[in-house]
Length: 116
Image 1 (tube, rainbow, N blue to C red):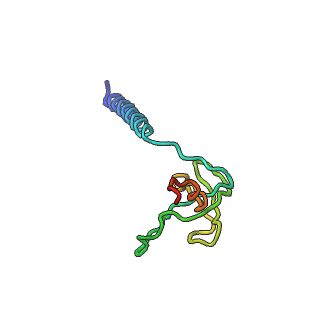
Image 2 (spheres, rainbow, N blue to C red; image 1 turned 90 degrees about the vertical axis):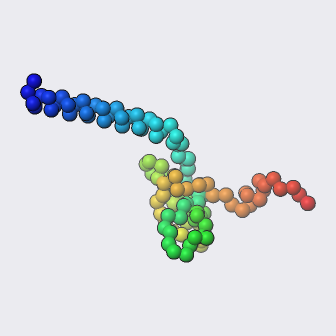
Image 3 (cartoon, one colour; image 1 turned 180 degrees about the vertical axis):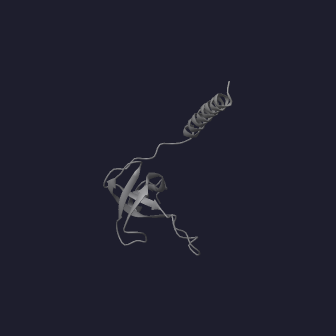
């Protein structure tokens, strides 16, 4: 065997072992991963505050409500602000940075507090 053939064979084996390890890593990563929640146009959501600065430690972690106006690929959504609350008017966000908006009326009607 020439030195070129030996080097070529070693590289092929290394490439195969790296690919095998990467496939195992992907498989173990996806075991613990949950699928992103799907939203439809018109749903109200709260979006996660992504810009932090000094002094807003006590601000809410989510901004909203926002209405979904367009669904894009890879669990991305274009949202538009509803009302005059804090936050951007129009923005694009991913499903992992959103949660369903629960209004105060829905929240109080579903509570299990005893009456009286």
